[in-house]
Image (cartoon, rainbow, N blue to C red):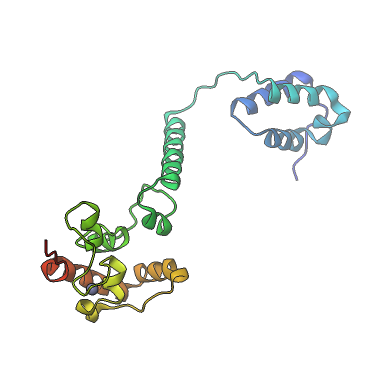
Length: 208
Ligand SMILES: [Zn+2]
């Protein structure tokens, strides 16, 4: 514990509160810092003046301008941009399967390769994807079932060599995360996706 300053004059208290207010300190933080510096009396009934000043500074706001360094502004802009991006990502209508796995936006890459991105997003040589863009008239795999990524990874007889265990619906997310964090599984997934790309005519048939 460091020694507090007893009974500060009101001007000093006012200046410090203004300073903290200008730095957008929260009221509770102003209170904490004032009490820590000047002792509990500065912000208690024992010093009504200080208390009143604090309330005025917080409620009315009378900030004075402080020059802020470019690095501060840069950090503020980055924080605001990330916040907007996060909001859009949380409330968007597309990319929901990716949102389940990567809920937080970040400037850092997730570290997935092309094949893993194809699998997670479903954007690739899958009948389910081609149908979305009217490049096929149906989304059936040649085996007759719906040709989406999870079908090829777990059920399709054409891709038997690379199958993973079929997850239950409630554990699908954990299943996917486990694959993406295991090097052996990632290698298998990569080979599966490459096979689908190379053999797209074999897997995706359209009689029309
Ligand atoms: Zn199939």
